[in-house]
Length: 482
Image (cartoon, rainbow, N blue to C red):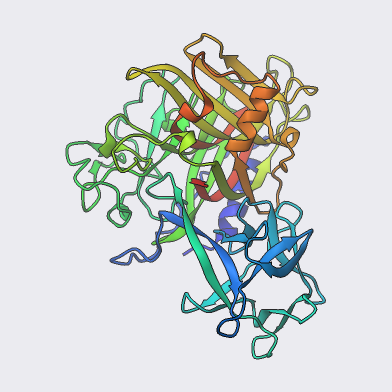
């Protein structure tokens, strides 16, 4: 099996093949998936937030950990910022995702912004009732003066914690992450119609672990899903729980070649977050300045059994108003990008463009009929953009139109931009969208409240015009909590 760094270096070889050489070096197929367990190894549908209570003598007043400034201290359990969560990247964060537990070289523990550095990885060990928090061989401790330190796990000052008032907040997806190989690659032509596969081999379609996800069984028993070699289906005839989507400019015969696109599965599966690499290489493509997109998406369906988004108990679709906070998250990094004036062909403005966006799809309905379909796009990476003085990357429709879309530069919202270092990313739509409404950059359809918006899907989208872009991503989720 090839190692991951071989795949990363390979994309550079692939890129160099465009620089004056006539030889085209196609990417090598990704490694086979890991062995599959017979049952899920993790609870994929729920995250947990906990009030971490310091275990003390019987009858003693309860004390809980909370954040004071950037310090981790113990105080009365009614204090603010008392809820923490264990994230996909093994960081421990405040429930709003803003502060991460970290430790410096002197073993002093504090809370830092999750965006200032790579979050520490922590293990939470115990029987679920009494537990310790540790990094490597050191455990979280707290002296009698309230200072938080890391000490040997055998030290008497190591604090034992228990969960108090544990509350779940729920993923909108059957297969968050995704963690199981249960997806389909599909192609959408510029006209919006799904292109005929014509027997081409299609990388990315893999339903081998779909039976482990918990999506409705037998939902796709009559649905033909083609991977280019013939119809494929999961063991229990459940449907794909995510899509790899290649859209607007790419055709099937452009996969796994340069110029072209590729979808590689590098690691994960069987309950571990899958690591995907998306390569969107259009610098040397014919009509290079057409918009070309490839990415990971979760979509809803009017047929509940085909939904990649988990419905409510009554079978209806979930809304923004179902939770006080609706948040998208992922972990990712740029692997390569070359957009800009030095490398661009003659696009309409003389410059190439590339960007990565996190797209939330919404709809507003009245009497069972959709009144308007909306797209809120947060853009944490843009190599070039046309209106440098505006927080708006693009905007269309809205008002009385049947559609409304707005793309917002993430750094104008106080969020970090993606770079070549791996980082975890959190977008709280319940806070961002009201800001867009207040600023006049987004308007609701007449007669509707924001809580009425039905969530129709989420996509992490890699887009290019006359440029090459490669992006690694895992741990994609959309979840809500109160």
